[in-house]
Amino acid sequence: MKSSTKLFSPRLLLALLILIGYQPGYAFYSWQEEDKSLELRGLLRAFATTIQNPDNALLYDNTQVKGIAGVARLIVDVNLNHQLSFEAQAVQSYIPTKLQSRGTKIKRFPDIERSDSLNLSRDNHQARLFLDRLNMQYQSEQLNLKIGRQPINLAASNYFTPNDFFAPFAAQTFYRAYKPGVDAIRADILIGELSQVSLIGVLGYEFDPRADTFWSNNPDWDKNAYIARASTVFQDFEIAILAGSIKRDKIIGLDFQGELFDWLGVRAEGHYFMPNQSNQDNTIEFALGIEHRWENTLTLRFEQFYHGKGAENTKDYNLVSLLPNPDSTYLARHYSAFGASYEMTPLLNTDALVLYNWVDQSRIIAFNAVYSLSDESELVFNLNVPMGERAEGPRIESEFGGQGKSITLEWRQYF
Image (cartoon, rainbow, N blue to C red; front, top):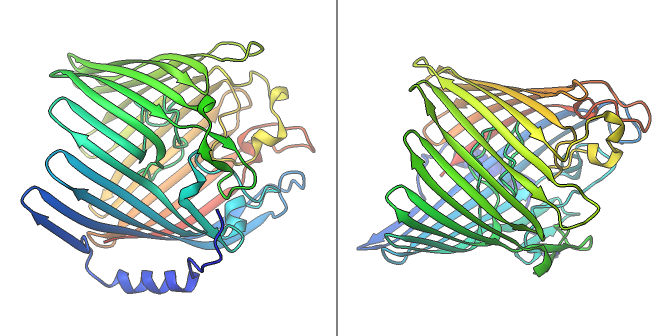
C-alpha cells in the first residue's frame, strides 16, 4: 500500500552509515530480568552496483546501469517467559528503479508472496518500509509452535533447493543471513530423542497488479500450502520425508544429509510433483550434492540438479521467463554447480561458484569476498559474470547468455 509520508532519504542513510561506522557495534538496547528479556539489534547495508547488459532492445532499455542503494533492518527479540517469545524485523530500503529492474523493460517484479498490508512505499516504489518478520513462538520440551510472518526453510542442499518452496535463494546468492518471511504457522513436534514431525501451513495470496508488492492484502484459501515433514537421524544421516499440497498441487518428497567415511558430506533433496491441472504432467525435481572441508579451511562442493519442469531444448524457452525475475524458476532440465570457499586470512573469506546449464551450455561464474573491518562491520565485493550465446531478436539461444554482468561493492554494519 502507498503512503505520502516521507519514509526515507538516501542522504540520511549515507550519513547514518558513516556515523555508525565509527561506533562500536553491539545490541543497542538489551534488558533482562529473571526469565524476561528484550534485545534490539540492527543491520545497515550500503551497495554500489554496476551492471552491463547485453545489447538487446527487446529485453533491455539500458545496456549499462549504475547506482547506489541502502537497506536498514531493525531486529526485535522479546522473551516473555521460558516458553513464550516474540520476534519482529522491520526493513527500510531505498533501491533506485534502475537497480530494481536491472535495466530490463519491466520496471518492477513481484515481491515475496505475502500480504501487502505490512508494506509501505513511496517515490515510485523506490523507498519501502515493511515487516519482514512478525511472529509469536511457544516452546516446550516436545513442541515448538510459531505463528506469524516467519522464514520457512526446508532446504537440505546448498545451491539447488527444490524442496524449499517459499522464497528460496538462488544458487549464486552468497549472503543468506535473513531469509524472507512468509505468513505461516509451523509446529515442530518432538516424537523421540532424534525424531520430529513438522506441520506447516502457509497463506497464499491473489496476484494484484495494483498492490505495491503485486500481492493482495487478504489470503486466497485456494492458494494456501499445507506440508507435513517427518525427520529422524540414522547413524550419521538425517533423513526426512514430506508430503502436502501447494496451491492445490500435490507433492511428496524426501531429503537427507550426512557424512560418509567421516570425510565426504552428502546432501540430497527432491519431490514428485502432481499438478492440480489435468493438462500438466507429473514431474520430478531432485538435487544431489557432495562436499568436503579440509583443515586449511578450503571447502569444495558439487551439486547436480534435475529440474523436471525445465525444457530439454532452447526452442521451448520463452522471452518473459528469461527476464531476471528473482522468483522465476530455472528454464532448463539439467544443471550443475561447483563451488569453493577459502579463508585467505583470518579477516578475508572468499567464495566462488560456477553454475552450468547443460541444455544450452550457458553458465554463470560468481565470486564473493568478505573482508572483516571489525567485529561488527565488513566490506563485501561481489562479481557475477553470465556467459552464453546472446539472443538473436526474439529467439533465446541460452538462459544465462541473456543476463547482465554485475559488480557490487557492499558495506555491512551490525549493531
